[in-house]
Image (cartoon, rainbow, N blue to C red; front, top):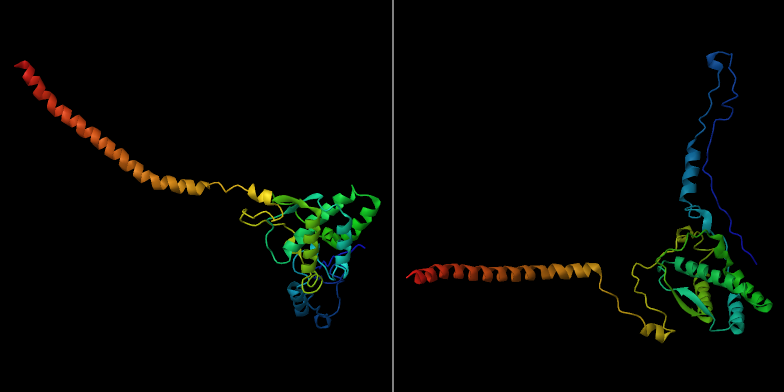
Amino acid sequence: MAFQVPEGRSQGPHSRAEGAGTCHRHEGSPAEMTVLAPAWSPNSSLLLLLLLLSPCLRGTPDCYFSHSPISSNFKVKFRELTDHLLKDYPVTVAVNLQDEKHCKALWSLFLAQRWIEQLKTVAGSKMQTLLEDVNTEIHFVTSCTFQPLPECLRFVQTNISHLLKDTCTQLLALKPCIGKACQNFSRCLEVQCQPDSSTLLPPRSPIALEATELPEPRPRQLLLLLLLLLPLTLVLLAAAWGLRWQRARRRGELHPGDASLVHR
């Protein structure tokens, strides 16, 4: 079952005076000449303003849903696939998606749909049928022209059962809204990462959590430490130079006396 997303493209009214290039010269008196009404009327301005303010036409129509593409029994399809799949089959999931309202769910479905397509290429005939049933529930994301994935996106390895469970959760989050209160997802076409890259790994893997290294000191922190140590270093250098200068001065005062004793 494929879902088509209506284009929903709007064109602004471009009014031109009809017959501007074919009008002929009027030979009657000036009093008999007809005055043409202006092509741009106040009604046209009002219509353009309504088009611009319409919530369904704001933004690009590249990710627009006028109806809900999620079926009512999608959880059954996910359950059947989970029962037949090898539950520890390795896949990857993004762990630092920006927590943007509705966009994060759409991004997760977009990444999950790519994995479903890959699994279909290596699965048997029966498994391909189950995978396609699940794919029809999330295939609507392919109608959105997403930008290339950002380099800041971080993936960790997990199993297919975790991916299917997360995908089902994202569908549950979108179902009450998509095609109803929220239709235009054009602001979600750019996948975004969290500004802080210290997102923890999922609790599914204790070994991975133990292998997580502590963050290294940042260059700004090192620079601040050097600035704090610089005055102390200058004080120590000045004290050492002052002691050396005092010793040299004392030696210079003693040498003339020693020389007079030798001449006697």
